[in-house]
Figure 1 (cartoon, rainbow, N blue to C red):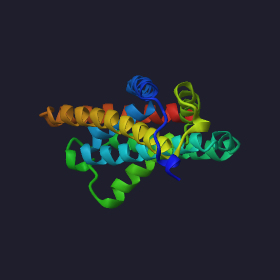
Figure 2: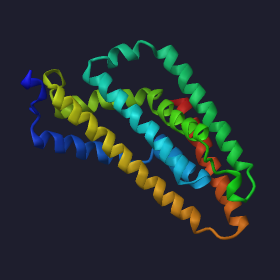
Figure 3: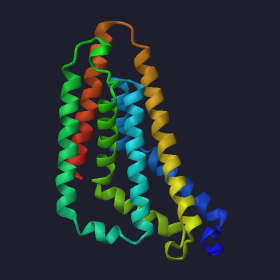
Length: 211
């Protein structure tokens, strides 16, 4: 029983895994693009809800890999494709909404619990419906750790590290984008900023649809 709660993964392996994961996740992709666009167009709070959804999806993917279910998940390619297209469609709709929004920030910011929940769900589905995300963890984790021999404590530690790095990275992007929006003064600048954010979200939707 006590063996399950023993950490057996060498600290060097954990640090190497974390460094590789951070480098890869810092690279702009659909998650980063959508996070920045949401923060610019809606404000920090909805962007953080979106980040929470992405981070929880990463946890789900890590657990799938650690349990050896990544190959099983790949068998449901048809279902994942439908989910991916639905997520892409929602992002495109959201991008068009922002692109056509008026200059007033209050027109595009979301504050209700329902809106924040939608933001979190969209972040979750964006990541979970991306087959490359499953491949990413399925390929990354075995490079640094022996997945088959992990204890419960090892699995919890690895999952926590993968959750923390994506949450911190995307939160940083969200904060920077939110502050950039706050520097805009005139309504004209805000209007074009909304259009830029909308275009970025539409682009993220296109990327999701083609992956």
